[in-house]
Image (cartoon, rainbow, N blue to C red; front, side, top):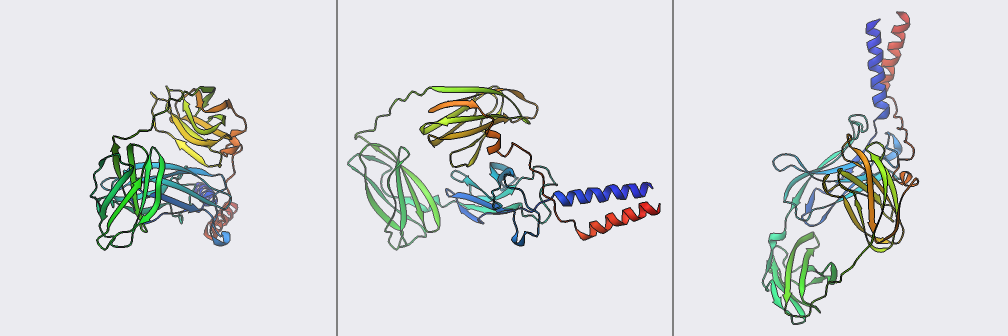
Length: 365
């Protein structure tokens, strides 16, 4: 009888595991140039729906790891499965070292969420092309109404290079292709109206090459306006299992959201385009902050402690907003209103036969 009981328990565990595991697949480019965005896409729906899939609204993290010497986390993004079964995440690569990396989707309840046939990891290589740029014009120039950009790019020959010039986060030229000769040499005089720092970005048909900063002195400079913004706030208790939810009625322009300090808070917010963002850059001594462009609509905010052992009242403040208030509607936008039951997977024939065999033995005993 004990043997039959153990067999019954094993069969039940196998059946439960098979019923809850879902198929998921991630994809990313095998090669990315440093400075380009690394876009990771994925799906949980297979042609013909022959495998179980994750429900729309399912959320977890996709993590970028460096594997140069030892595996170390570089960045992570939160993904949300959409109605069609797709999801995506984008990582900035500017400033990262060239080398080998992986992207992996995290199973929130290993090994029960993702099935064994899932593709949860992909290797990729970051290639740094910034050393291919050789600048011949001075990096510091006197103001004369134009920015002199001259140089050459190795391996590009006469195919042309795309140039974009930015000043104080505004694009003042391009992106536009300019001519390169057989040696990759280029030359351009970009009209400018003020002194200051200019960030020049070079790309080609293969992708990002690099960025060079020029400084223009001696001419008219753009005054820095002094802007005073009033912060408005609201408070609510929060734990890891019971987050605090807010809605921010934004104004048009740049909106800043900040938490209180004292606890290592995690901030998630859904912008006006219904895109989910996650911020967790600070510790317990500094407030967590998020800054984004808004059009004057509602933005929903979710705050909870990083540690399962922490709890407290969080104050969320916002600048360039008409109101901040605790929200009963916000949980639904994060998919937290009602737990979504796991979809059952087809039971493998072998496991079904095993369960039947256990039942027959139990009756004979």
